[in-house]
Length: 116
View 1: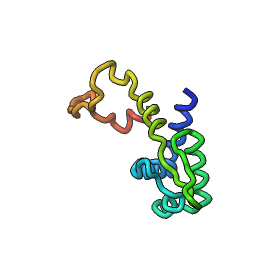
View 2 (view 1 turned 90 degrees about the vertical axis):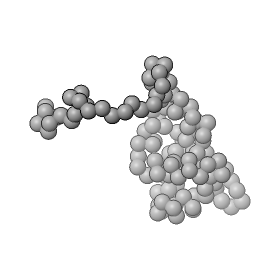
View 3 (view 1 turned 30 degrees about the vertical axis):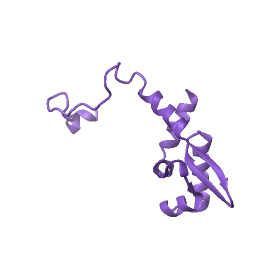
View 4 (view 1 turned 45 degrees about the vertical axis):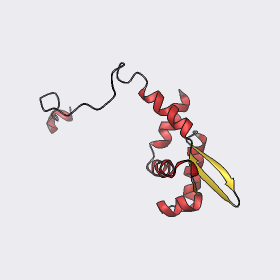
């Protein structure tokens, strides 16, 4: 359970989420640190900090390729995290989103009632 909380906490930070999404899009081939920094406009020290955090939580892995370090999303760990989040989420029913319906149960509370 601690690993799940750590992974979710890592993704709750905007820069790390952007890095992770970029790596997921890159697939198993991954991207070099330089390319990630270039694509996201991040200085090397900042990027290194965030990549290290993602690696500690098991969301990202790295490998040496010549003089470059290639980072990629750890899809096995990502799938385990998604599996944990969706396990029993819909009591055995389809997890497809329900269509939006209008009605008093779905209307926003007036501003004065929200602050109470």
